[in-house]
Image 1 (cartoon, one colour):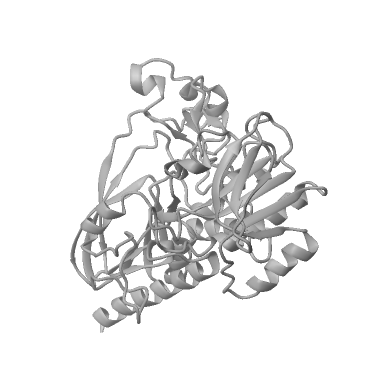
Image 2 (image 1 turned 60 degrees about the vertical axis):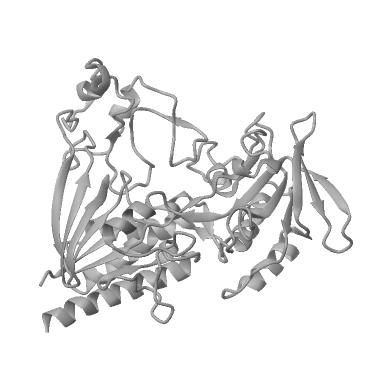
Length: 431
């Protein structure tokens, strides 16, 4: 009997599952492929329908998770095999080198300041700014430990430089670190691998990547976030002009026979929140939301839309956007079919924001093969409709966006539910 649980994915779903298990006295191994835990929620500025600060909600949970004596956080790690059966699994984990000693690093940032390798696209900030080879993944990240990018580090590639090691007073830089395999004995596994945005450049009529002032919703989140690439100033990528007229286009890649047939669940409220935030940045701003139909099914969601219309003067336009073009001022011009009369109308804006479909994270097909579980037709982990955290392999559970489109509150609920199911496996096998 292995009295421990492996949680794959360090976003809000994995964090919640880990905390529930740990507080029940169960050992947890939380595996995350990036340098810190936090996941997609850490990239958001605020959450709907309360407009509370996202990181303010998430950060205490990240710290509780990292500091809990029953939770071992394994960053820069991926699962490479899972053998055995429910109650008696052996998992092998590949841990990539950080080239920084996590126990010694104080997160002071001296190595970042001294690193001469610049202009590397920053993944956390959706490539809207650049970082250095030595960097801290994001300012509130847990663990707050630097990481060195081996693909760009001059010392690791060419054996020269080493500036970071020279300035590190804690002597935390360790270029001798190697990739290693960790073997874990666990009784159950929880999948919490989250999502990624659909590649909007595949929808050519919207001009994403061709027009600088056409961005996706997660890029918008980073633009309006105080610790983002523009320090919270909502400006256009093309010229730095204040974006006071913003158009939000719904169902980009969702509910579309050419791309993803399913509804991504969160986009209607996500865009409503972002439209409200435009007004909070600029009092004379104007937001337009172009939609097919609004799916406001959660608690207080309909009231949230009414609040957006009444207090923030958000205009909802029912009609499918056919195309986005760019005028001579680099303003996106949105052409849409009016849902009421069928006419083609247009609206010029400073910035167009695409509410892209959300898809399962990269590598889920390989992970499913490793774990011995099935995926559905959209590559979400297949779960029992009457027990929505149970996958097709006993002892392996899925929660959050890994098993289908859900918002943050439902993700948290599923994280707790999967923890409960995993605990049941341990208790049954123990008895």
